[in-house]
Image 1 (spheres, rainbow, N blue to C red):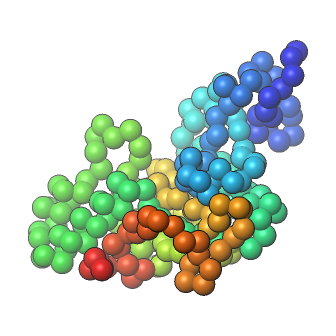
Image 2: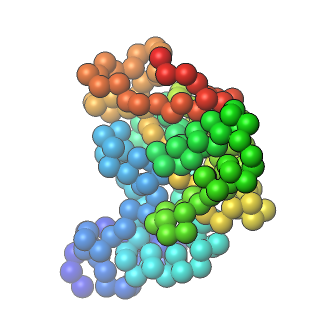
Length: 218
């Protein structure tokens, strides 16, 4: 057996024996919920990795895998806190999901019929990624689950809410939510409105307010 370039996190109690130990065969299984390749995400030095074989086996049973993802996401919050204490999060929807929610709220404001709205925002049949039921996105927005400067306790609470929704079969997958660590380029945490880094380009924020309504562009 050659040197292992990573440790498969499939079973914390038993070392992986699939023979897939090179980095090109690893899968960063939850980084999409933390911004994947965004600059703030790259500052985090530890992520749970699965070998390709174990990842394929794990995702074969979707319900069990979604529950496992919840656990991995919660553990990752603790890992980030260990590495960079005091990290806060900007919690956002993936762009396509944010657009669906914005479209729904806009059509509701225009008093469009429920049939028209559902036709416009229904999940795509051939979509590559899971599109959550709009009632789930609306519920999360109304509960102020999205936004900046969320503490570790707040993001953990949001993930626990998602776990409950999965348990109740309100949805089949963890929604496309990103928990973006608020970190400067040097890895120091910051708070929006207090000490955020100055940038040439201001990141585009969602037009869905904390209360689940549409905000006017400034």
